[in-house]
Length: 255
Image (cartoon, rainbow, N blue to C red):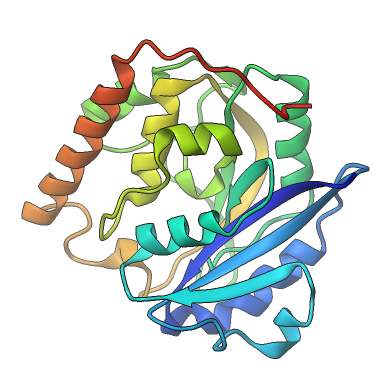
């Protein structure tokens, strides 16, 4: 039986032209024997027909749409359609370098008590150059439960890039999916997962993160003001509630 990694991608109208490059990077991935991927593309405020036919002709690509609700809602709606035991995030405007998916799978198979992985990032600049992501990477290997939360609680920034996340399906369900925030929903999920389970930092580059003026992080409210304060408050309250629960986690289908 084939084991599946579910790739979750929210997209709004302006980002649809980036999807072919993301697709090319997916097709180029070499997965371990017995594994394949499915790509859940969720059009925020559309019906899914906006996705280009040359992508959707691949049976593994599964577009759909929903009422406009923002990236957190779109991610959760895509996840709701997934069938994989692992869930990988891929934003519509980003690109996976060779080997990214295989490394996620190999780490989670080798460490059944690890719930999620993240990896090194290179920023993909408008001129096509690659620049190392600005935050300093943690040491390679296991990240003990609560380590990222402690870093975030003092800086309000994640120590690793949430756009590289791969997580076990059951742990994502325990965390409640993505919060319905206008931004930082990926950080919110990463922090929630961190207080539930050990993670693992993969030192090889796992994502080329596209930098452009239209991305959510370029918005003026992203790093300050009343909206930012409310987002940080919601993330903190969710993480604190999970942090103090006496959870007993198992790892079904961990291989």
